[in-house]
Length: 96
Image: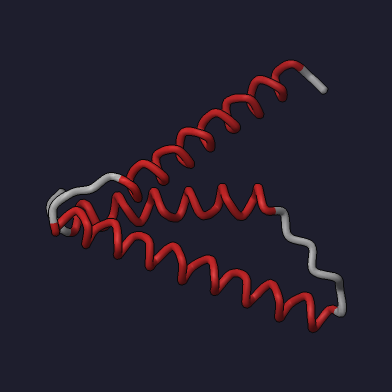
């Protein structure tokens, strides 16, 4: 594998690790009611998005008669990205 590709993948892995840690810290950090509402709405949006994606994946695999093969690492990173984007949106919406 070329060195440039390894550096790029290392940076991507580092960014995803930071997003995962940020997600866990924001979920565990106590705060006022406004902060709890922001985290609750971002968490709900992330949950609904992931459930919707999984339902579509199940339907697609059922129609194509393929075995279901999901990568948990990819699901974790997609959850972190969706959560981060939703958290930023709701912070801006609620004046955070």
